[in-house]
Image: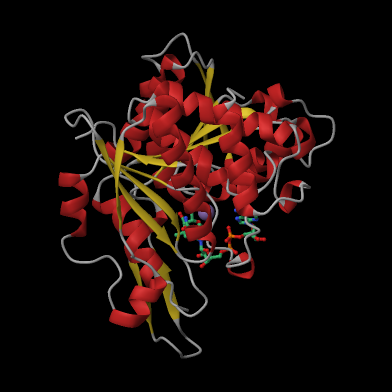
Amino acid sequence: MTTTRDVKRIAVVPGDGIGAEVTNESLAVLEHLRETHGVAVELQHFDWGADKFLREGVSLPEGALEILSNEFDAILAGAFGDPRVKSNQHAEDILLGMRRGLDLYINLRPVRLLDARLTPLKDRTTGEINFVVFRENTEGSYIGAGGFLKRGTPHEIATQEELNTRHGVERIIVAAFEYARAHGRRKVTMADKSNVQRYGGDLWQRVFREVAAGYTEIEANHQYVDAMAMFMVLNPAQYDVIVTNNLFGDILTDLGAALQGGLGMAASGNMHPGRVSLFEPVHGSAPPLAGKNVANPIGSILTAAMMLEYLGFTAAGEAVEAAVGASVTAGETTRDLGGTLSTTEAGAAIRRRIRAGS
Ligand code: NAD
Ligand code: IPM
Ligand code: MN
């Protein structure tokens, strides 16, 4: 539980590819905050990832979920995915295993433009791209249900099932409205494909209307997800809080990442309030960039800031966000943002700004 320990305990799982490089920069920021903001955290590293899987055949070790939920307040992860593991089995076991196994039903992914120069959209100001996505994180198309019939024959049939429970749909929609209320957001928009996905869509529609009725001060509206993908590009300023299912949330948040400067910028938290929660950047292991000291560490560092705020270190989290904003505006960035810095130099620039108070 997050409230009982004086010194918060963080499990660090860097994972594969650039995961380790960007996580190192987040850890350096945490170390720095010990001095500047008195943030006392205890870190324990776990080597779960492709190397261990290939070496020992172990992805998420037995008993790992119990250890995480009993002994830690938060998990800081990098990325999982390696070209040597074609099946992606280890990534699924570790990442989806933690999300589902720890019942982390909220995947909160902010989309916030820190500097107008970063967005590929023409003539957009920072105020126009500033919303949060609540992605359902434990069910939908991610449950791994389905199967093959006559596999490998010309008459093959593959089914892939989607699960929507009343409990699961309700709790993510409630979380979105609660967040809107707590953060002074005026609108919650639900995205679905209820014009085609009649049963799941119908459930989401009904629950959305019922929950919205309890939040009369917040505007509740609905868009089909295909239209939302278009409007996110044409008119992102209309969004405040978006709530959607697991798969649509995955896709829309890569688009959202692009709006704020690319995957290297996007942060995310997998949460179950009051329980150990998992923080990881939106991006993957980016194999072509791995080991070159070129990956953008900001997605991971903003993720660490989210984690700090979740753990109650609000001032420290805000200081990190301010430092990131200032370093982006000063052009102290990696190449994906048009700068010339390496991963480690970009991290150092952010730490300098934390010390200087941005
Ligand atoms: P990716 O996010 O790794 O890369 C997509 C694109 O974004 C690439 O062009 C990459 O260079 C760029 N990019 C990503 N992060 C960046 C950063 N920090 N700085 C600069 N550029 C960055 O997605 P992908 O290529 O589709 O997937 C690669 C592997 O990662 C796959 O195995 C995939 O399954 C896995 N993956 C894991 C996670 C996760 O662990 N949460 C998320 C997405 C993908
Ligand atoms: C993400 C990733 C994961 C997902 C993959 C790697 C399983 O794309 O975190 O966005 O689909 O959720
Ligand atoms: Mn994704």
